[in-house]
Length: 212
Ligand code: ADP
Ligand code: ADP
Ligand code: ZN
Image 1 (cartoon, protein in one colour):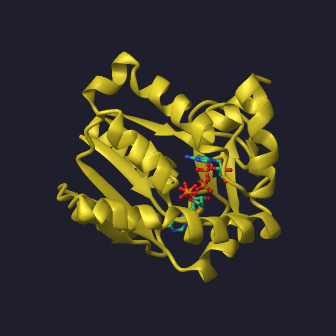
Image 2 (image 1 turned 60 degrees about the vertical axis):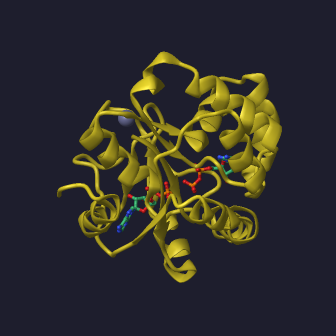
Image 3 (image 1 turned 30 degrees about the vertical axis):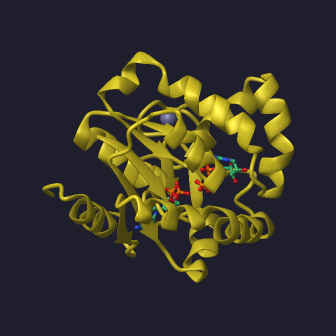
């Protein structure tokens, strides 16, 4: 299964992607996590991406398309993959289609803007393995420590109210049109985000025709 996850910041792409990855036995490719790792490692891509991410803007299409094409050409992707956070523009979607990568389904996780700001202010992320957490809905066993790798949990620099507002605008203006693009190709399915992670998972599995 080659799957794309679309949705506003905080919709639950990373969280559901992790659950789907286990269920389907395929890797999740998160472009946001790739960029944050690049920044941490001080690579050329990281250096150029940082200012865009800090402002809640999109990193230029050419950079992202090159990054994702490289990643998708690695051998593990032959078994299937879950793309989280790419494509984010119609140009990126078109480039993916043109590169000949077959997509089976595009899952849109829908969530109202009002819920997002509040939800993202309590998001935490493992500084080592990027696993997602939430101070109320997905607490680590020990405060501030990743259950999986013992890494320190941090708040993302772009999860502040001002930047979140920018990212929401960018989502509606530049990313949402890809839903129509994939709907025309007959690939779009929708799941509605719920208050609890497990309830969202039920909706996600239903939308994808998977058994809970
Ligand atoms: P995205 O990858 O779409 O930006 P995340 O998966 O990182 O979203 O989720 C954003 C935050 O909300 C995280 O802190 C996550 O633990 C939490 N979260 C995810 N899904 C739900 C849900 N259904 N209910 C409550 N909190 C959720
Ligand atoms: P979220 O989980 O909040 O949806 P991500 O972790 O997916 O956010 O992405 C964080 C930031 O990384 C975005 O705000 C954007 O600046 C950059 N980014 C990630 N993926 C892409 C992409 N496909 N195209 C352009 N910029 C991207
Ligand atoms: Zn970790």
